[in-house]
Length: 253
Image (tube, rainbow, N blue to C red; front, side):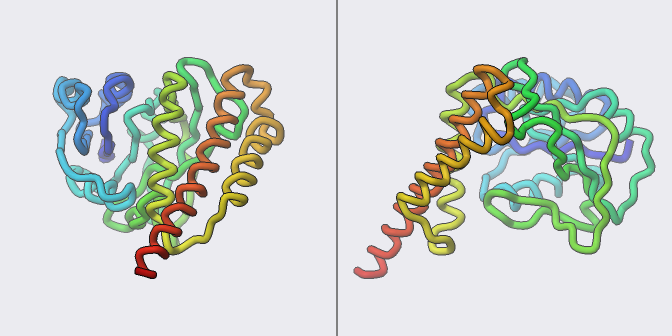
């Protein structure tokens, strides 16, 4: 196999074991840890095919590029600590002849705990995860990073990535606070916001997830997800509004 798996992580102890077990057939796995304190590094070190790197986090795009620089192979599979490569995807990575002028898209199967999420806009998402670092890289976005695709083909590879992103309701609360802060920090002074924008954006997010995306068919998990989408979007824009106001206040002084 000429593919390296690359992961950036902080405090992923609850899920990283399963993720790394799914990468057992890879000869090179890079785990770039930015300050874990929950035993993540100890779990990582128990895998002989893993190269543990400790470093700073300065935005998703930049940090993923830095992590990829430690890989043995030019082909990079980006994976998170709460994701699992299934057998079909592993077989495709091992046997398929890859086109260096292409970015490969992976199908995602979503879970809350071990409950499959079939609606809410979560399931069967197609996400760019496999690329050749000698040809392209991630942009430098702090959040909402993506692989630069100008002039490149986008191809779907066989198999699935199983995504176990939330193991409890508390996970939703922690992540919505983190991502809303990252969004506001990345957009302060660039985008406008207001309390009304925050309110209506959050309200529409709930309606879109629960009704238009049929999240109600996922039962109580669908309600949790829809409410989380609403709260995340509300706090994204209300934090941005507050940061913009603080920036204007500093300039005025």
